[in-house]
Image 1 (cartoon, rainbow, N blue to C red):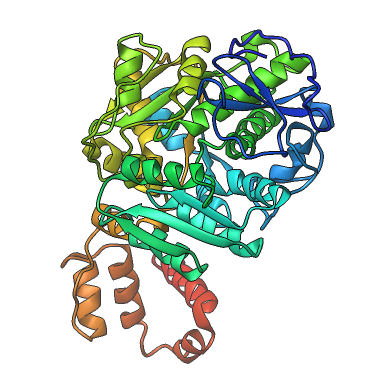
Image 2 (cartoon, one colour):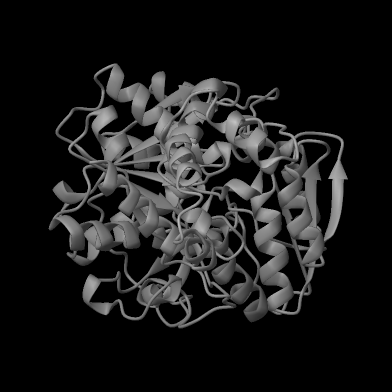
Length: 464
């Protein structure tokens, strides 16, 4: 199966293990999946994909979470916490403000470690155990390290994470530390960390579990399956477009692979495949640069900067898989400013959805593309948010309102919250004060919140 949307499933080669094999997307060379460790093609160094003799259909899916989709995965079950089955939120106020037919938020921050990375790790760590490796490793902007540490601990395996010094949110380092990972802070950016981990993996010192590892993306493609199933259940049709943040471009590649497999099995028509739209921060936008110039490869950005730390990546290794996903679904890519990301983070929070900055890039990108007419009003859209707000508490604090100091006095607090005016709460206070001599007051106080509310309603009725 090539990277074309219409490609039929490939014939099962002799090296396959129970209908599963690895195949180079560049030269087509095929490899046994579990006999030796392969991250890239041994012949041309191209990226590898996991291929299946029998692509999945919706009828084969049963259960819940990532392993509901084991018909599309290498094993029946992996090292699980469990993960997946994340909410697809409705956001009617944002839908109306942006002006699209429907808008849902797929909140991957509700996975066990608070990010979509758990989907990839449940598969990747299972493969590591199958291969019999002893030490797991990754480079990370934070979320990968947290997930790897948790799943490595669950699997009883040693874990090593390399992080760019001073560039990872405290919440993510705390997770990796508590789960027992050995943390190395590198004097460089994420791409430098990944270079080192790849070299260590090449020396056989570690088993690499960044998304360069093709098995990582197998877990992540279940996001696509879930979106299709959940959206169809609610609307009777699949979404027109999925907008997602882009860092290493693993999710873009993974979702496209999910759709290609469903098309190959006949479960999904090509016309039903959602348009994939990538969003990057302006300070780290090599994928956007490539798409806007119609290129088939990205130019590495050595200097990247954005407060959206999870997508502060200048060399997206999965671009060769992700760019066809954007082009072949009629999609695009857009860059947004840090201020636009923060505005979107606040707007999601007003709907009760708490995400880290990188996650909010998807909504910021949708808003920008809708404003310039690249997305039409009649589209049904799903925005993917990838990490929980507590992944980056400092950014959440900066985006939110400041605490307001008040005296240790109830009357002063009431005066402060009413800003010197008699609002609803002030009115309640006045009525209760006026009724202070009423014989019902002791019962009101003793009866708690419910009786207090009933007394207030009665007072309002008496005034009517």
